Length: 118
Image (cartoon, rainbow, N blue to C red; front, side, top):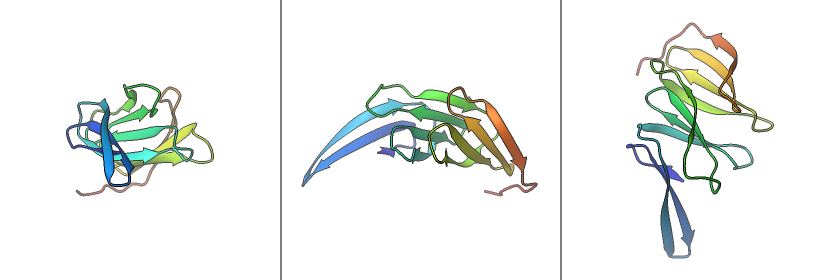
């Protein structure tokens, strides 16, 4: 799986010297990172505009918006293991938050009192 800056997630299936490219989903926002869950059933799509989407490869073509902060851009996000119930995000503002993947509810947050200069 890889992404184009325009917001499109692609899947490449490689067999020997042959490959097949498939468009998985288009979220219409610039993507900063893709992160698979530990069991590879869910893909977190983090955008540069402060939105995190979940996508279930092979189950549907559309990504579900997990949360949209609008103003706070994320540096990174990842799954909290074990399991696929929660994800954690780190924002440019220095805030670390834990989110419930089921509905995007913030269950915990911690301010590191530092801001990343990009």
